[in-house]
Image (tube, rainbow, N blue to C red):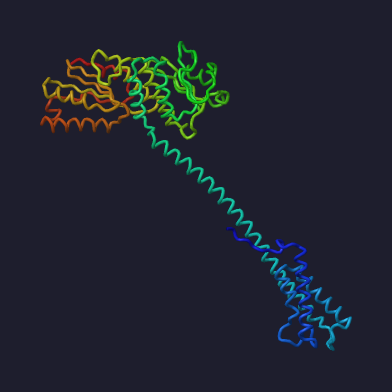
Amino acid sequence: MKPSLRKARQVPESQAWLEVLVFTALALAIPAWLRPSDPFWQHGDFAWPMLGPLLVALRYGFAKGLASVLLLVAGQLLLRRVDALVTAQDYPFGTMVGYALVAMVAGEFRDLWERTNEQQKLQLDYVRDRLDTFTRHYHLLRSSHDRLEQMLAGHALSLRESLQAVRSAIGQLQERRLDKAARAILGLFVEYGGLQSVSLYAVEDGNIIGEPLARVGQTQPANGKDPMVLAMFEQRELISVAQLQSRAEQSQYQIVIPLIDVNDRVYGVLLVEQIQFFTLRESTLTLMAVMAGHVGDLLRHALANPVMGPDEKPYFHAQVLRAQREAKRYAIPAQLMKIRATEPSAQAERVLEHLNATRRGLDVYLYDAQSLTLLLLMPLADELDQAGFIGRINSWSVERLGKSLAELNIQVEEQRSLPVDEEAINHFMELGR
């Protein structure tokens, strides 16, 4: 409960003047009644008639205190004139002047106290208002932070998990056609991108065609002339409002996401009209762009076996090119590794088979049993991950086979961190002994 300060202005003016009259009347009547021979209390220990105006001055300030003194003087003179006060004393004008000065000083201090108190109250009200504003903003920020934590706890927005989800969802489909996979694709982007209003359309020959294959929320018909759509077809990559600057004000979309394969063929487009505010950041845009690229590759290639044979070399090469593009465009790390057994043996084959069996979730392998060569693409891995991978395989070989990789004549012929030049990729893709 807020403390309240009682001030003269809070008392009705009529009540204030009534109290002035009452206190003045008491100061006039009581001394005359108690000591008729000395109604002005000149010979007493304390000038009691002064008490009334003094109380008025302390309660209501300088003006009403002075008015009380003047009324007291006027009342005493009037009673003396009509012989209501029977006394041989002369009227003590000097004493009454002293009364007036004391009342005026008391009233002035009271007025000063009221002004100081009012100023402090205004400052207190300002501080309270600022505190209320801060508290509201704090709770709003806390609520947004809690919501973000709940969203992140519900599904970690990591690039690795999103790509695994893309492979899992599309890899399970019997038909790799966009119209058949549309609902699954859109669901992934809604989950990992925080999209609230979005439509998925098919694209043919650089044009958006037909009705939406899938959509979430309230959406408008596709506008192929929208500046963000035109920019997407021109640049062949994800376009957000931040990239178009002034032209974005004329767009009905916040993000335009092409489902594009490594050869720049656009299979479909996601037109995002509304997205959760706290997810519209660079990391989320990168995640969705990479997801869209992998979706495009999966739509192009019917085979998605992460451990391939020599006849699937073109698809493995496409995966390497995809990782190369992401490393250049988004600085997403990836490693290439070529492992070869220079001398065939049962133990060497067992090591290579173990590598195939213990593949990491996103890694893509190409294994040539004839040349005992294993090509590894390790997305989202840096040089430390690569070194740790080799160390774990060597430890497994020593523990299970009693020999290190070197003793089994298994060599890591190439280790490369993407991006690299095209010649290096072509050299890496060679399987011959």
